[in-house]
Length: 211
Image (cartoon, rainbow, N blue to C red; front, side, top):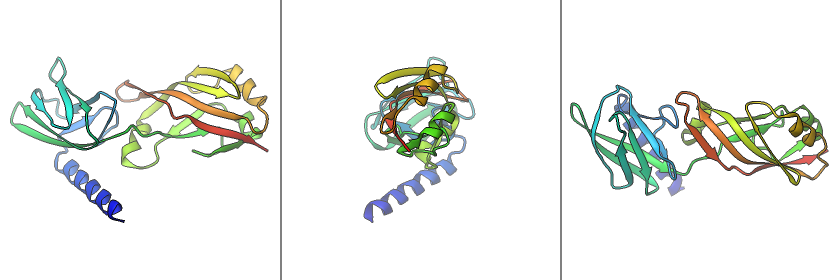
């Protein structure tokens, strides 16, 4: 209960900061997101295209792009990350929240999102994978992404494909998969629609064939 209250208070704190700094920085991993992710170089850009002259943070490694128009942030700690910037007019204080990259919800065919099993009829009609966020702020970035490449394990065999649709080899392998075998999503490369940036994730989501 105490953890839920603290989480709610923190998210309220973040939303208040966001409302107070509408002209602040946009994380190019997710449009308008106040989250930054461990293990990634998070690019933050000012919405007014102002120049950045200095940057510092105790909770993250920060650097300024060569053209002084973006901030590159690599979190060292989980939780709130405070960044102090020197801009053209004055200093700016940003507060983001550092967390692990969340996994998207994944759908194979019309079986639904994040289900653990799939029927052979659903496999036969599957043309590709679909992704979406789960509606929480930390995964809203997946609503800004398209799937550009994916690796699958179908039974004991491995396949890869690019674009929105399965290859003929993948569809044939899916149609031959017996009951009890699995389709496992091993690796996905996603592209952020607005910036062209790519994100590699390894969700290891599995679907077991059932009658």
